[in-house]
Image (tube, rainbow, N blue to C red; front, side, top):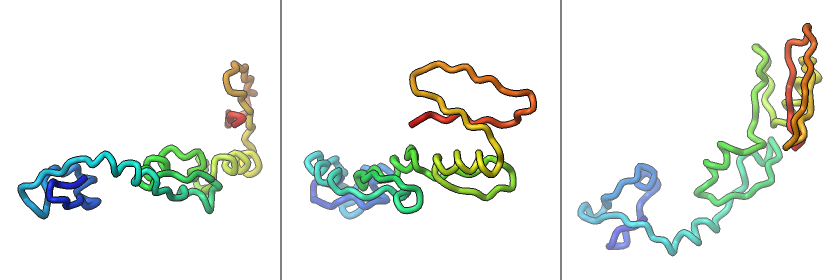
Length: 129
């Protein structure tokens, strides 16, 4: 975003969708489409890379969106009092080994029948992918 006098919108103005230029007062911000190519080319590694093994690099301006849907985002253990925090695969292993949950793999795109025992309190249904 920039105004006709070529003043660029700062992050705060862009995030608030301000339309008035703070420098010109009378200027109006407009979207500069040719800059999109450059902005989308600036990539960063996912914040879940180091600790949780996400291998994706995403455009800088979309990193926050990716973080909300990242399959490697850390998950908390649902058992009250347990402080475990880890990626979905490590949470699956944690629930099975530390809390004795039964883990049932579910093939994608197929129907399955799950039979639960009366004494069984917790079961994790996990996709194979």
